[in-house]
Image (cartoon, rainbow, N blue to C red; front, side, top):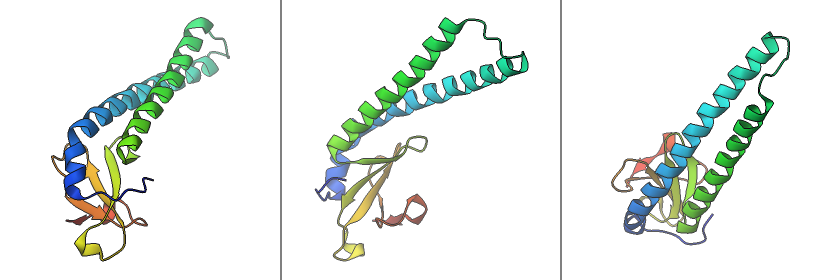
Length: 136
């Protein structure tokens, strides 16, 4: 987690870049999930056929591509981390930034931004999550 504490305005200024990074990570995640499902289905078909694999080269190439997606996602999440954010959920597009808000008193909180929101409007404690978001 970043040692820096963000204001909502500072997070809002990052939203264009954050959106770009998050959309890239979400797309990679979706492609990886689809490929994982296809590989799992094929594995089940292979088992049902007695364990005989047809094109091992194709299987290996797709498995390597799945690993590549994981590496690419990690790189994008690192860029989000360099902005100061912590990605919490790629499917929902959740990113938290440590910050301070009046409503929370003197302790730091997470400023919680969700993909598609044009501004950060919610916060929650460090020991809470999305379901406990409170309006700024």
